[in-house]
Image 1 (cartoon, one colour):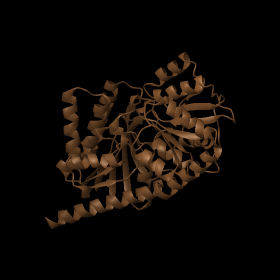
Image 2 (cartoon, helix red, strand yellow):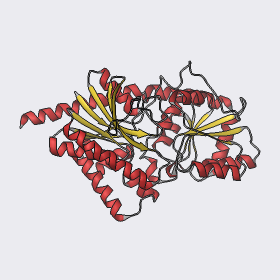
Image 3 (cartoon, rainbow, N blue to C red):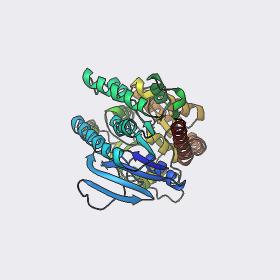
Image 4 (cartoon, rainbow, N blue to C red):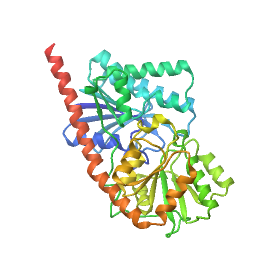
Length: 415
């Protein structure tokens, strides 16, 4: 099976962003399939390609994956207009590959929603089977957050969403709410499968990992870590609110380490400096292996999002799965399916949103009782290994794609 795989933010483990697409593609290759990955140039990604661009494109083979990378730079720090233009450029450059490349199946994954455009063209003009993976519900999430309010743009996005879902032979959702959202748009439940993000157990929780702490975090400090984007959706002012409570309580041994990039990082750093929150340390994004070293020294991972109901069951954040893979308890500050998992498997703490006192008190309760942290950490690693092993999920992904292609071929031969 020859799979044409579209993911704008593709990265190998050398980057500092998620590697779901890398692991899925590599598993396809291991099982004897051929994969062509089409991507852009993301600030936090490392595709593995090092040659110069020729006509704004470079190609190469990375770990058995044929990679086509467009010279389209994307960063979470870009403004909304620039990001939108980058998404559209990627989509339209991808159309030509979808129309002329040699492949058996097209697979496209968000974000952005425009990732579905080449799949739509492949299905309409070449009758190729198309599987669409949905990482976030658009335009539901940006509408709920108030990021997009223009009714014309929202209508266009809703139309593109509908077209992508209904052009696809099957859809993959990364969270229960995403699956439900796809079905609500009229897709048969039999054509939608839940495949959540997974845990990279060979990277995180590895006994050979070189642990490290920032210079301002002492060995006897309780270290709470947040990894990932620092944007509007992440709601990181909630952490600074808790940090302020702890500062006022003189709990100087609890430190917050933020690692990553994003449009609001500068504002967060300015607020922390203005309010004297010396318990907040901001670091740049780092590759996965170095991140694993930080998490190996951390005491708890922070799963933080803005208090938007659409997030409760409609997101599957990489950071949660990195935390539990590293054997870290997780503090979650919003209700939903991850909070349910944390409570069910006793692998962390779920606190109510917009309650800095409850947030701070939860950290104090575990900082003062290390035996609880140890138990939650063991439960987290067990959960990661038994239910969210990335390799197991990748196997399910390959089996699903094989079944979709088999159904497509059977249907074709019946005509």
